[in-house]
Image 1 (cartoon, rainbow, N blue to C red):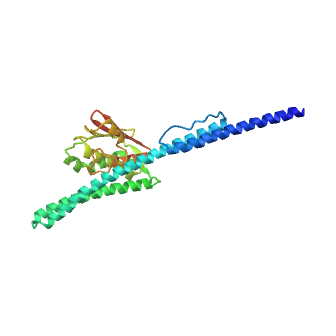
Image 2 (cartoon, rainbow, N blue to C red):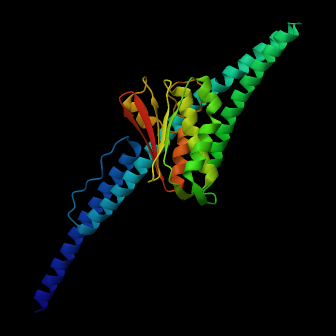
Image 3 (cartoon, rainbow, N blue to C red):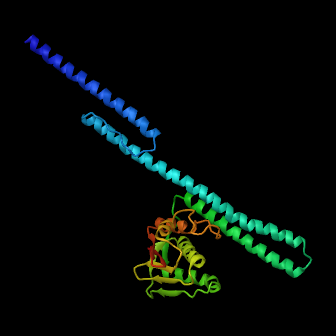
Length: 291
């Protein structure tokens, strides 16, 4: 009987010793592969030889965390690239009017003709306003990102807000020779939203259309609260359409834009619980908002 007990204990000890050895080997595998995955640019996951359920569960948990870490790394890396491109674009956009201002100030010093000087001052004013718009857009975006709480909301009549926005752009549309086709439902579409934020959304989208439209603009609002802005965009590709709402993205560099207008619009719409997306149908760009 004693020998049987000793035999069982010996077997148990051998089993525990083997299990400990296997577990230590698996932990060394995890440790080695974990360090390797952190150093290398790879999506390969940790793979262990152990069949132990708890050790494999540990490896699976580490793999999930590595996936999250990898995703965040790529996100930050892309953000850094976007920031570099943005700094280049913004520097160009600000330097162009600033150089013109210096140039015309120098020309004013060299002329005694009052009419010519006034002409140069008008150009300087336009370039200054251009710089002001760019800096205001940047400031608005930085405030938007740092504000975690959505501003106060109330019932807003979408019809009225959209009509007011289009009326405000009438001079700009006229200068571009654009006669907008407007189809707004007669039924009042009321939504719980922030009026200033929604006005900013419409303004940014119409402003984008005024800049890049091929000479037309169609705006519609139906009873479901779906707003559509459509204009000809012959030079636009499907790939570019997918990037329109990315921050700092501009279709044409140096066209008085930081590339933040549509990004701001998307952020505000999503904060209000809506959806915004863009589609390219032939040569027609359509931006749709669902409120």
